[in-house]
Image (cartoon, rainbow, N blue to C red; front, side, top):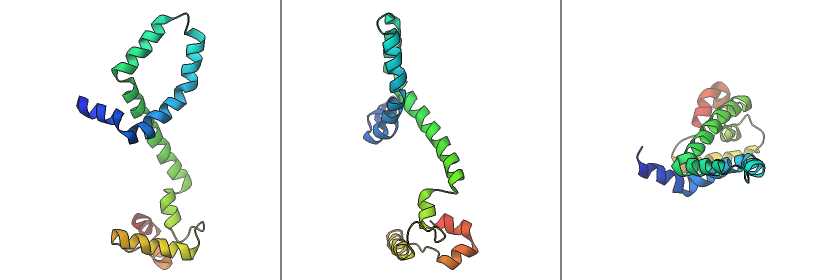
Length: 133
């Protein structure tokens, strides 16, 4: 990874909003507490924090937060029984009514040029149906 790649990730609006801002929001209470407790007495702390931030601390933090989020995502998907979008498109899920679900299937099938399984096909092979969704 080159320096340009690192700068692109930090300056990319998506990466900033999806990774950096949530990470900073989570760290805000810790940073505020540390600043309140030690800010006026420890100037070395300010120097260390500034150095860490300027030497790639934000990039490291975004990657750590992303990895933690991906691990949590996998655990949540297992707990929920699959990805939410897959569940919503399944015939066995009742959150979306069957008429709307047929419309969604038809719309998506036309856009991505594929066929979605009907309710009977889904019952016969739910794993293959989930892969299609």
